[in-house]
Length: 112
Image (cartoon, rainbow, N blue to C red):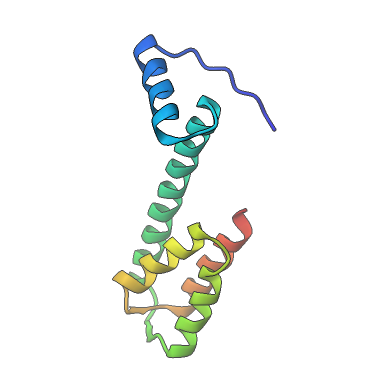
């Protein structure tokens, strides 16, 4: 694991310490790591949404069948981040290019 040293302003350092104790984190390192992982997930979901919108605007799309949704749910079971991505897919989009969805889900599976 890599080590990163940060110089923080005192108010930010105190805020991190307070969040660490209030949130039940092991230490400040654990808190900062969780915050950064959350930001990474947010950015990945944002990227996924952009790719999905792009796929809708691209090639002709087909209606997703029950089998497609079953496949997406299997991907979601691989982890919480993936589950959130699939919820985004199923909650906002009903028509899209299946090839692009499949490729996107495959990319999500291979990130971690």
